[in-house]
Length: 160
Image (cartoon, rainbow, N blue to C red; front, side):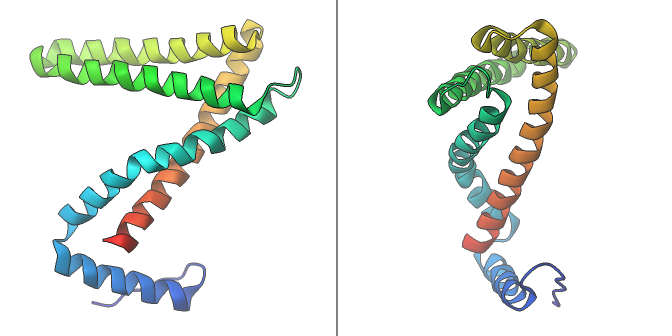
């Protein structure tokens, strides 16, 4: 009934959020919000990849890599990871839960190795440097993807 907001642009944001809450109540609540969020996730990924490619550009400044190389590397990695996770989801529908849990663990470990190995081979880094960059970029990716998903959620709230 009453919205308290202490963030940036309080006058404008509070009004927008109040209007979004009223619209959300009239359009079906959380189900409509979830649908709007899921519809915006693919668009968010197309924002995340080029932004993260800029971050990667900073990590490989010697020898200089082209921006397009980083974008293509990210598209390849994301495509492979999404394909493998899709197959895993289908297999989990068939196999028992105990097997599914172990399979999930094995696949996640493989995906970490696949990404690290891809970085090591594609960028021709030493083992230690590849490990350092892998973990550093992993943390930055977690931050960037969290930010993009939060903005996607805000977009979903404002467009429902």
